[in-house]
Length: 507
Image 1 (tube, one colour):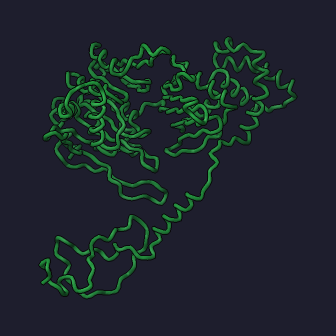
Image 2: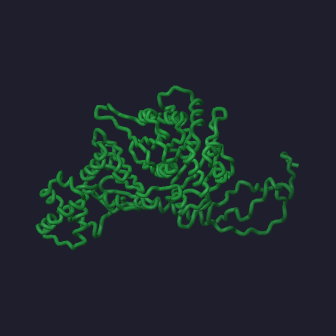
Image 3: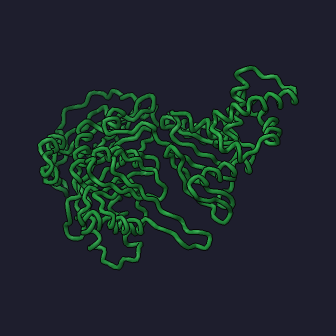
């Protein structure tokens, strides 16, 4: 008998034997090594079942070697990071540099700004032919049309950005100075084949974008948020803050409104999750959508808004208006930055307080970043149930922690326990969205906020996305699982007659 109450010998651990626990199972790859036959021994009972022999990785496993070779390749690789324009586009842009100065000498830019793009093309055509004759440049029909478009975009549009803005497959545009532009297509970042003439050219286009919404950008106000006519969100930062030159980030949104059914078809959620979210939107549950940058928070909020009753009055409050609700009675509100003297700023908190006097049924915040979180919670708890908002967090638990911290950052002098209780009483559901490393966007968690236990907010997970494996093409495989728990928000669903459907979706 050993000192730990185990017998030595075949039934226990013999002399020199090693314990069989603590062997890591390989994630993928590696061929199992057949082991020689061993004498029968005691397995340790049901509490400690024996490890399968093929779970022990072989010493010559290829997975580690493959991983290390990929790391070595990445460490030794070099990337230019420069946008390359070649072929037909390069020749057109080269001719444009010659034609544009002569064209501006013969055209009044202010008069040109009053015309549409089609009208301007008609006016430009004979002048362009005249300039080309002077330069002794001969173009075919295709090159003429391309040149007209480039010149019109230069005068009325956003120059080289127009080509990217008109591409429906592009979801994000990131300009890092005049020589480098990246775009996101189908979840992957690639370099775009466009260039700007110089920093001055890029800065002029940035000014043109922000001037459309009454904002300004220069050395005194080097940061600006704006939006395009189609609802796309724009952020501009200029030198001296940006060291590579003017940087423009554009988040495009689909022209066709995204619905929850479409997100389900895209693989972003399961059928049961889709049903539960539809009921949550229709039954006036207070929903917080949490996720990282580019994870699809705004898209999810727009999709959820489709379930709002058309007879309800909805107010949206944002820094830069990008929400596009699909309701008839919808009033969007937008904050205002301070003027050059630092006066006249209207914050989200100011708009939330004012919105309470406008007889809203629901208040939707595009994104909460600070103390305005307390005003939203107060609205949720004072008859404006069904309100929604988004915030940046990596998990539902972190989302609750961030809401507490944002309120504590403000001037509100109340204890942390009271803040936690306010959150627990106000929020019904947290919807966690993530952008996975393969570029896909998934709804990874739907979590209920139940209440308080001591000074801790208690939650209950209704649905979860579980990672299973990664395919040979790099696609992440997983499955959406229901926890099978009875939801605490069932009473709200019962008030609207959706209790049975909600219960079946969650179980």
